[in-house]
Length: 118
Length: 107
Image 1 (spheres, rainbow over the protein chains, first blue to last red):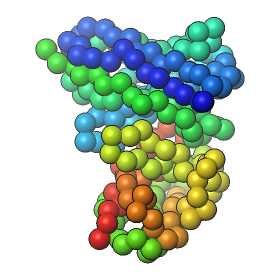
Image 2: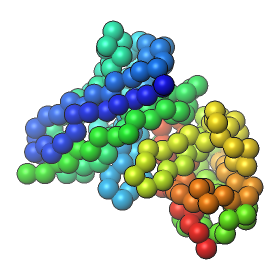
Image 3: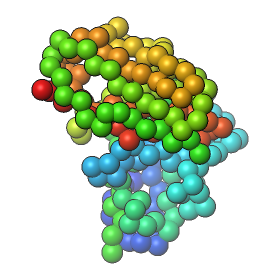
Image 4: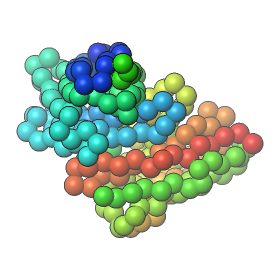
């Protein structure tokens, strides 16, 4: 079945780095744009970044631009999010999601929790 | 940057009633507009995309409408499983924005 599975979350110290992964299955990963969306504890959804199906274009939310990097390896059906110099406000559940059409997210992973704390 | 405002913040209704959830954009937007449902401990679920198209497997009691700055999600007759948080979302120039959410709870 169509599925996204995230991993790589955990506790990270401010200023350290972390890489999140999202493995896709059940669909042709290389033909879909992909996104990261996060949700701080008890808060709403916040879009983080998008990458085109072939990795040729990437866009970021202002809150993470310059610190986070989205990438993908279509040979491994895997999406990544490199989290550099994290801050306390980056603490959240991070979801990967598939881009549907040109503006929505139709398949979501179960999320991976990132806690930024010393 | 487009800001989305959802109203009401909380909506208390009974099963069988009709729910109308609103989302207003800070300026006129295109049709790249979606609605999601999220239950506690779960990932969001796509309900509506392109403002009015139901996603795969979504019951026809869910409908979306609107254009310009005002968009609406309507649930025609609430089922017990519909009580959740609902988010609107828009895409503009490959930047995506979510609204703050409307919590739909049982009266």
